[in-house]
Length: 532
Image 1: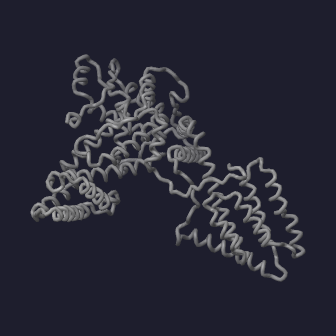
Image 2: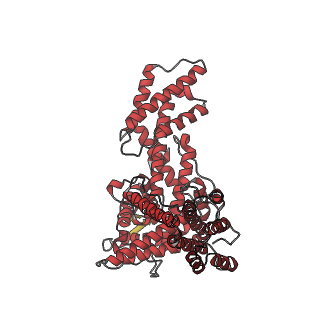
Image 3: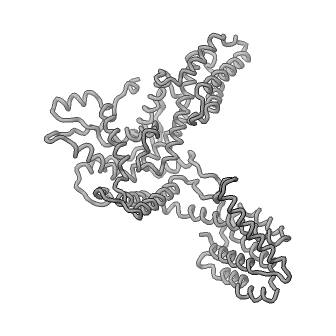
């Protein structure tokens, strides 16, 4: 809370995830891959430790009561709020706004209008009545006192003396209440507490010395804004302390949810199970055949499984099932990353087609290529929407690209693109929507390769690895997205690795056939793209 002379900083920016927030998060992570988590995972497979955090417990199946469901909902709400404060430095609360024509807003407006009409009617009586006015003054006094620090005794005493309700009631009985004077004192006191962003509002309040009802109404409006400013200032003040203990707090909250709701890891288990199967397919063939000859079953290591699982999130299909429970707090961020990646991949596919079809017209002109990239990204914005016509939009993209290229050729006194070539270019660009389009498949595969390299690289905290061939045109965007994604993964590992270890133990070892000797493979998978 601010001191009497401190004014909280404005927090008027919208809550969003940006690169600055990702950089701050990156500074809290030890590296792009949390080596300590991987080491911990390996040790946990052979450890018999039964501490609460090292081996998350799950109750046997039981009937969940309504109270337990409500408790779990509150824990999840607190968990989401704490997580958002920690990972999003721009997070802040805003006054709730009801939809313009909603029933709730109409009812609220009617009730407020009735109250202010009653107040105005009372003050216009002869002699005036002050019942409603006294209730307002009492509420204003309590609000002003809530802004004070515990040690602000002098100002607290002054407010209580000036807004002494017993004295004001006695004055009201004798028709001697100076309501305008009290309003002026309240406004001056508000000016001592408010954030700089509210200075203009306070100035307007001081200038509005006419209708007392409108003045009181504006006082309440500004007080509501000041309350929100105080809440956001408190969030900013507590964020550094919360960051120090965020991992332990989130882990304990999730453990509490798991104890009350035993099925709270069902989707996470299915997610990891599918990732084990995929990671097994990605393992180097030589290691599989070697282990088979020795009579043992080769299994992917925890690092390989988890990295494969995290990569699946970039192409998550919500229609096939919800996200894992351990990633619910990052659902919005993951959706934004997924949409951004889809956009970047489509832009890269379009530019690759342009460069391969009419490379001579754009070669040596980085400014033109950059202009085509930005134009394509703008025309494809919103491509994730269900009502977005992808084929039509790609057709518009090809028309604009041909127009810009022809304009550039004309400026350099070169012949324009033939109509046949423009038609071929349009057809190739529109074919990107086909599921097995080779350009699209190549770009998506190399994007996955790049993110896998990021997850497995230990030195990229300081120097990011270069993007694979073919993605150079979207390198800045892909690197920024990579930082965001890896920071999200690293933080998730720090919080939920004990839960993942418990699931991996069950899936990899507890379900083994009697006498089988599992062999853990920690190496990274090999793919055809990695040899290019």
